[in-house]
Image (cartoon, rainbow, N blue to C red; front, side):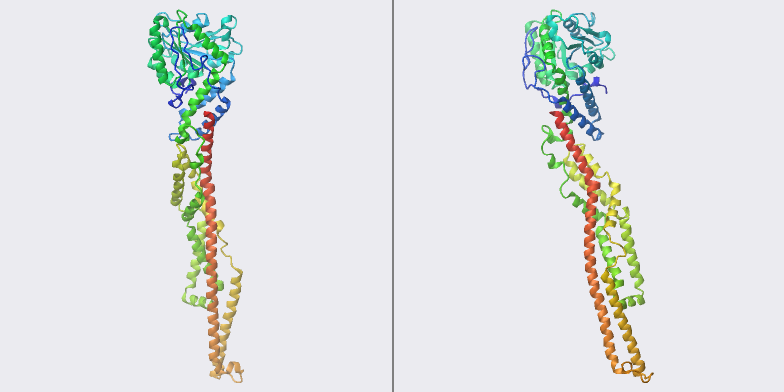
Length: 595
């Protein structure tokens, strides 16, 4: 879209609040200027804010919005129009501040070219005889010094530029700095005429709409131009021309009706002038208004400020309904990550990754591993003889294999459960925000979805202890159990010696300790006691191992949850917070653009 295509689309009803309240239009007879709210000039409103700062803020709004444009995001046409406004305003501020661009716009037969020639003091713009029409823009400049770049920016053909710098009469000296442009008829059938009119209306500092008594209520000019320019009253004047065709009473009726129309369109402060290019009536009043506007040198900045007001209002819906007037309250109430979200999300990730099952497997693996050290070897021999030990070894191997698999990455985390957790956090925050932020927050929450399973696996792996780690006291117990087992073996050998020597007398002259059969019960009791001591030692130590394994399980599960909360913070909440931070920047920039 070119800059010239703005007038019918670039302003919305959001900006239709007039600056000067409900001040009425002046209603006078032919040749009498309407008394505006300030009594003179078209730029008498409050001084504009820092236009440079406002334009910079709007540029930030555009930058943030451009990254979020699309069918469900910021309107691309709106962003384009805003970009063009920033570019156009920047160009105008860089060009001659001592010149004011005023355009005479109107339809075929309104007499604006005749009015232009009367103001310029020469027949610069051709006036049709059989069918009045203006095909190309013409410009008359009062004081050409420094106006060249401005004329180039306006795109006025060299052949249609006229200078009054060498022939300024005393009465025209007050117009020095005026660039008066006669626009093509907005309803012209000539190719490109309407486009050129739209373009120059978008570039003008001051807009003077010339209407004739027969077509002053023409829907085309009101619908296409005046209504979209609501909020620009300070830089708009409406001239009811050809008053020589009306009686004083008819002129007053026309002015009254025109004022009513402009009020309904939001142009509460626009001046209404009544003129006649043929008789010269009202021209002095028009010249006075132009002179005051040029002297004030505020039309350009007022026009840009009005454009900014209207454009910024169009972005307000993207800040949320609660920000229709302020944009400066309540942001923290809903545009933030709820407290405890990392904990809740970490718990969901723990379930998805099976952290509880990992802890249980670790506990079982620890207990199975401890049996090799603190278990009673006699029980091991029994298991061995019954074929149970290979099963235990296989189970221990499988447990550690499962733990390694879980800590290895995606295989350990259920993607569906992760997706459910991401959806839940997005739904918790997103609906509180206006479009498109509600959607972009959801997207941000899922932006690193594919990295999460691996990160959860790594969190598990970092929390798990070494597979073959052995507690030092286990080795001491193993030595003690080995000693007890040795005593049992020695006791059995003693019983064998007593049976062979003491009972069957297979050997003569042996020591009494090996030959006294009466010792058999006592040796048996001693062996039973040693066996019981070994069993009790194993039982007590396994209780201690189980308690320690349970504590280790709790500690490891806590570490896994903590690490998974870190994963949630880094891969989910951090992108969400960044998006919410962008939303905050957008609201702040929009507030600055609206000041």
